[in-house]
Length: 315
Length: 298
Image (cartoon, rainbow over all chains, first blue to last red; front, side):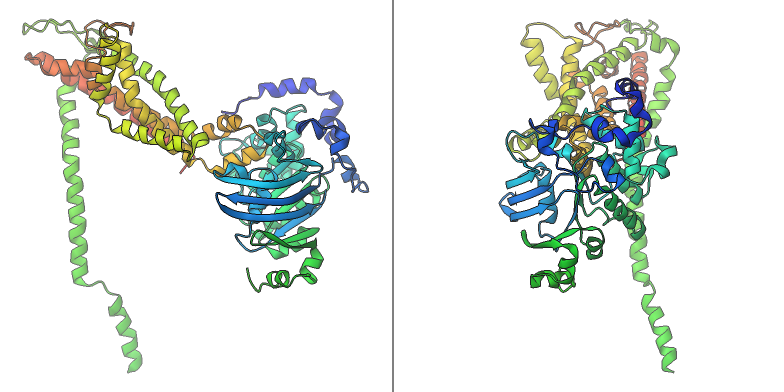
């Protein structure tokens, strides 16, 4: 029961200026993708947008930059049980930050607080502030739906919508959020290309998303979250259900994606953190032990507990 | 020597003892016997329905109304057209009332109420309603809509009684199916920035649809076979009637009235009507099975 069929897609094209249909990326930053501001409360574009730190490469020039995130005294609860006990942590724009730590240390809870998915669990609540650039996503005036549009999420288990085709899965974001200003086909294609999946599925877009392999499904889910053009993507152990080759592809993808979004990735895999992350944060029992450039965390950590964890002495 | 002993001893250790073999045989035989025993009445019911019912089936049996003229042996007693159409009308209206309400309640319970206090009160009430004997629903509607309004029987009153009967079944089955929809799907749709109502309409309901259809059809099938709620709500009549504001005939009530008749031909008509009713319900069940086979949920 997809709400829209193929009909509205055609009408969309009418709104589109013809020059934009052929070549997606050039005009994408200004025309096709919306300015970051109107989604969240009343903020002007210039306030939200940080200058691109990656202007050097041609690829970065055509993408909108990501936004930075700062956790301030973040606490998260499940009923009376406190899972995150006062975190102060920054995620720099257009960087990959890995969150490592033993099971149950609050990694997943923490990233679910960033896009306010934590509060979806009955009895769960969060305290403190999560600053998206300079906007507190927990501010009472902020629309939670808008926060989630700006901060995408990829889950541990690949979960394409089972009733939808590959195309519909990627189109689900723009359709469900009623934000379909561009040509939907073009949005889907560019999201699938960004997720490195286009070549593999271009000739079978109408097949069910569940017909893909696990690794392809996870890239489909990444494409799905890219289609709403988020500023930040949160990944909760995105490769834990995948084989090494599929994992490698996701990691290559993360490397490319950070040019246009800020990425926070929770992982149990030290090698993965070392491979993909610019910075790594080590959490223990709901608290931050240490955060720093990845190579420092893995080679000369300041805290003995970090060293014990990354060398496999516990956890 | 020792090598020889080591090679034979493990084999005998792994052999099945005769005592265990006997026990196994005995248990299997007992289970099979119980299964066959349970099948006997089922097979007999179907056998008698076909043997007695098929004989009274004819074109005119389905195309004429009962005449009510049952006194003389050779008089034309008519068919069951009004009963078939009446059942379809009453059940259709009952479904139109109970299915949307029931599914809404289930959506509320699963997507909004969850483990709140009010939700558990609703669940308890639904469970109690499931156990209420069908005649009580008829009695309730009789008191409220027949006695209460000082009027008489009508088809729509029968529909209301059946709708009450169906409601808990629809709610419970839809709730179970909605709970089977993986929460990861809801989360990933919400994480895309979709408002909750769109997540429900575009992701949760389409995923749950085949399963919910199964539950709904089973509720419809159950309602179609009920006599008690209709006896003193919809009444019984001879004529085919498309106005549910009047007395409306139905298959179960027709069977009930025919079976207590002393005339043999009328009694045979009851068997024919029973076979018709069972066929309709069987058809609904087959459709329900096909729907559940299409389901993507465990």
